[in-house]
Amino acid sequence: MHGTIAGPSAQVDLTAINAVQSLFTKGVSDPWASNLAADFIDLALWHDRIRYPLAFLAGAATDSDTAVVPPLLADLQRRDADWFVPEPLVLEERRRLAPDLLEAAVAEIGAFAINNLKPVRRFLDLHESRWIGEQIRSRSRPGSDNQFVFDLEALYASTRAKEVAARLNIPRERFHYLFDLILKYLLYAEQGTGGYYLTHPIRAKQSFRFLGSSLITTPGPSQPIPISLGPHLARLGQQRGRDWLTSALHETRAHIRAEDMTLLNGPDTLSRDALWELTRRLRLPAKLRSYDRLKVGTAVTTASAGLLSLELMGAPLPAAVGMTMSLATNIWSGKVPNQVSRIRWIQWMFESPLEND
Image 1: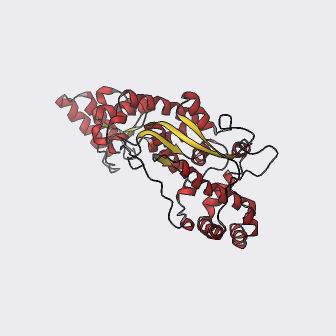
Image 2: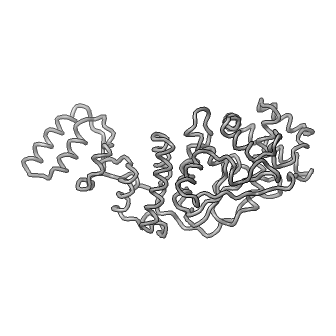
Image 3: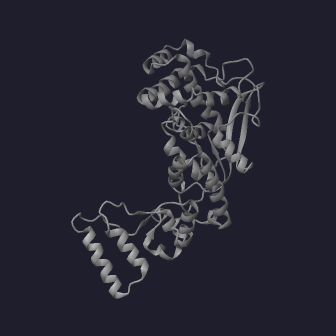
């Protein structure tokens, strides 16, 4: 994030949510998941309401209220029913690309897939997973294995599509799935209301030149976010698990609203006390200020001399503790136990990871 996503409403692809979910699911993960997780977390924290579009054909087996969603999204909806809201797009019939656009679209999307071979294959492997398949089937017509919302019958007659699938070394149906998934972005853009829209890179990296111009959604008024918590929570979430992450998001979201942080304009509007309150709540690791690694031969002796001089001078205990931590070993990283960094009266000598954001 670049500090410009705050606002009451936003939109996110279900494909992007699946990418974040893959970090907490056994098996292959989305190749763009780590970066997406940080963006998704900031999106969730700084917006009051987030819509996710669901495109499916009329007469599908289910509707948006009962469609299967990734467990991460289900957890967030359980904690606050109005936080992530489905936005159904029901199609009476499949959309069709104009014949003169089809080959250009195949060429453009195919070029992207070929030049991003490993991540695209990994992405498609993920979408072969059972848990994603359950979501897709929940929005398909009963008894039908074809979940496409675009009419891709012409792809079977496309020599270029056949060549792309061969270059990717995948069945043609998998390329058709990728093609349809990317084209859905055109439908979702139609629903855009001008607010912030977080889309999966598999779509965001496309130029859509085959339409005659790049597809650029017009952003609505946005307010800079005071601080990006996404990278920190994404890293901790992968260590502590999905339940911890959704709980931390719910509690942090409530805190930043209770403190009116959503009304602030940037990082310089947050006091150090406010940053430390967030640090304590999220149990983020802290470091000593201005820590420098020491030479092996002088580390222990310097520490001893420093402590002796402090004792003679009657220096306060926190300074002595800091001297011990920073000089006793040359391999210490400067990080301190979370329990220690949460003690308020010695926090002057620590640095919150949020202070440099």
